Image (cartoon, rainbow, N blue to C red; front, side, top):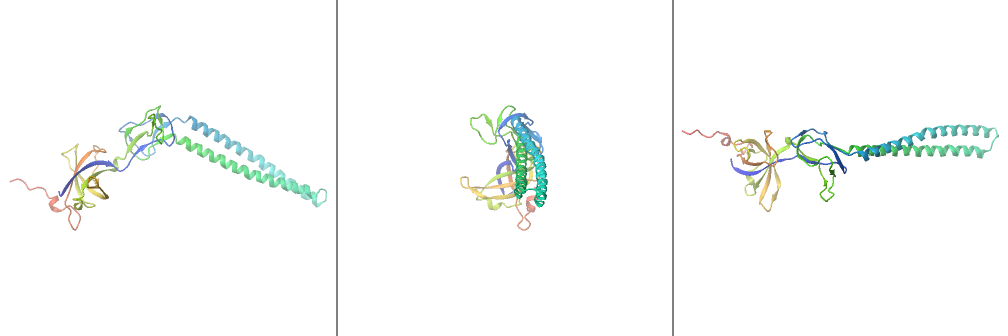
Length: 276
């Protein structure tokens, strides 16, 4: 072992989950320590207003669509009138002005039909927006993981932004992907040359001092902490253990690296000599 360092277990993937809209929590389905899967419903907000908006938008879209058949029938009738007027003009039984008026009526109805079709499209877009707003009252897990913090209770107001005053929650809870756990340690910058990516590491958790966990350097973060004169190093755990949780203290020992292969040197891997 060529270098020791201390640090903490961290999760590369964790999130404080909140609703996309401000509202009152109606139902909450999480507890600390609960395993959840991506897309699972974590909470529901009061959707009374959103549901009413959807019903109104749906009714308006239906009313807009209902006007289309009437306009189409009137247009068909107007086109037949044009044909009759043209026939009468050809026989000199009516004036050309009446035929022109009939064609103008056709053009007017076509314009109204196009406008009404646009109105239907707008109303249907409003329905989709209302459906999204209703869906936003349901809070889902963004990825699979474990609930580590339950931050709200039924009846409380939650919001995606801080509203101030301390009465509005900004999150439903915190999810941690336990598969993304790794170790971060601060190495004195005077010794960082002894560390390299892929280097083998032995990790010992403060909670379980008698167990050594195999690990490997992921990367050396290319930034130094001026106040502490250290460089941060990310280390991957090569074995998973349900007892390992975020923010646990850990001590790591960097093993010597073979200059050619990059693997731990034979001296580092050899067992200690037996006592005589």
